[in-house]
Length: 216
Image (tube, rainbow, N blue to C red):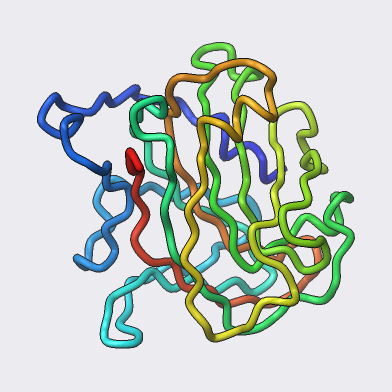
């Protein structure tokens, strides 16, 4: 039931006025050797998340061995002002081609969630998942196998992408949520990261670079 990471109790931390006026909103500043504000949720054994140096920089290293746990950070971001989610990531090996539309195939070497909280009405919580797919073609979308009404998957990277290589991503979250939900969403409430292999009994290693929202 990995989608339960979406249903955490959100503190509703709102960005200060000074931060709101910046050109970008930092979410994960791993290059500064900090995990401040990030919390862990374990579903089935613990994926290891550690800050480490790679390519003369510090990044978040995730290692999963038949495990499923994630890190999440609660932060309200105005995605009408800052619609673009930016991040970089890499994987160090491939999962076998899994049927990711089924529960037994709901594993990803790397994924990043954008969460819209339902507050007390947790069943209304929505999560847009950008994943490193083992099977789907790039930008293919599908409902999550565990929570088809609440979580939506997008193949940001695929089996055709190289391992051991950094990829830089930039996605318009405002437009993506409108496309998925059919309604305008003005803010998001959390970001989550997960490398998980519990359903396929596999292993995966990924690195995540800094994550931030930007106006352009």
